[in-house]
Image (cartoon, rainbow, N blue to C red):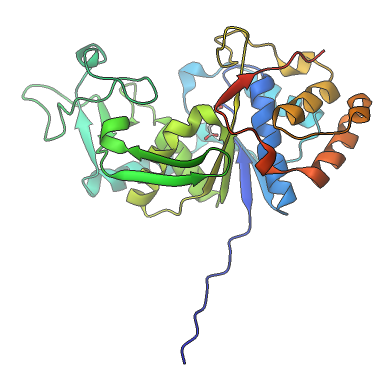
Length: 307
Ligand code: GLU
């Protein structure tokens, strides 16, 4: 009689990965809180990664400000902080693998040349395939793209079953940008794998990136984490809170008020008396009561008034 040996379950490792393009706002606090509580209530580790791969969008001092703010709110991360700006070698190795295996191709197209092509699911221009079979004569490579093919499906821990036809919904996507920088999609996949991330809990603005990330994991022979996408906080005009929409910095609110608002936004129901508590008491309650299943199953929701 044969016995089946199951591989040991990988211990939970989660992360928060802010881009230092400005101060933390309520939306980033929601993502930090959800990922932190889900990791800790699973007895897991929670890592902090500063996503400064997109150097033109990096604001000097923003990363340090984010780190100080997280500490002030009582977040405790494990191990050293990872900085994407120091990880070029790992991204280059992954890119070379994609190039050698024929999964990536050089692309000469400019933004203007793609201005007429259809829209991808995330609102960007879907690549029309011009350089897929080779660079047009007389043109040289600007960027590198991965051939998008196949259907990717996954069960999202909050949003339920998701499915994407990569060619139709995303199109061939950039892994090395025309300005020579590695693209977010490549960096995040390499970083999550190197850190052994098992669970990604983040804002639903990245839901439409997930199929591409799972596709890349497959091409690079990397395991796919479990994903859960939290609702994104919007302002009165229905826009995602961000530096561009002039979202208020979270550290201008009393931390306990902001944390309480984030917990309620995530569908958790702390007793009213905790509204007067400090962050330590809120964390204590939240670590005992966190339920991912209580998070509203929607992609965005209005940010509350905090104080
Ligand atoms: N750096 C991204 C952001 O700040 C998050 C990326 C991720 O969680 O995968 O929106």
